[in-house]
Image (cartoon, rainbow, N blue to C red; front, side):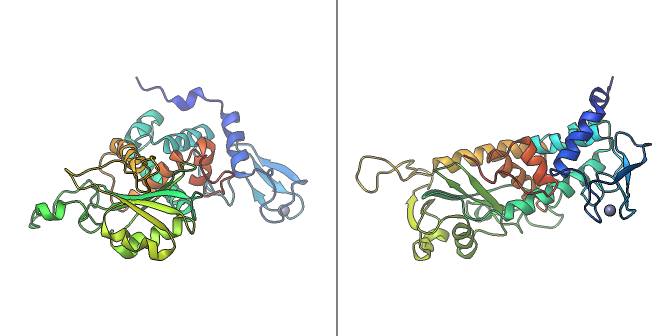
Length: 315
Ligand SMILES: [Zn+2]
């Protein structure tokens, strides 16, 4: 028996949670911004109340002018939807739990996740003098994974080889940097892993003068010319060396195991979604980034709503 979990939640508490998120300084008239003349106009959607501003006559509610403008879902359902998006609950499971339509929920998810992805692109350099940079390739096709089109030849082993994944051949690359000092990460889905793309990404997201540890992929070769200290690790299969002591001080500092662990965590996060379209992959990667940077559920919901974060990075 399906018993909607929404019915178990306190609608008033959920409504107040949403109001506090959307209006941290308190609810006020969206036109004249005064909060001292709000008369209740209608209660038929309680706990969502319609107000009329006694100063300018504007009728509004807590959702007016926000991403929830015009929506009719009960506040408890919104809270559970945001919680599910923030926690990476697969859409099919969330739809079952909430008793709502899966495709509609998927549309909603993409609408809100796009805001979280937009905020993720605004993150500048991660603080830290020691950083790692690397890339991984995620199988993701137009819609349901990398099913080949009829008549299109199967990819040759060479195209499947490391370094040859790109957005067009349904192995979109995810590039990442991690700060060894704070653990904060920045990730981005890119078209291809050529030198221009990698250097632009790494210089945007690392501090001037930071040391960047990478593998020996030639795309990173120009990093030293961009004001970064650059050290490489050999990842060629059969010749892997996970840590190397470059400067002879006895500390094996040249490794990028942090990012290797990160990729494993990202793959684990993406797996339950089963066949994310490559056109939406950046959204799921952004949600993972926010979660990994420990912004908390409230912080995640803020990014989904397109609101500024109070705490921008992990510690
Ligand atoms: Zn007003």
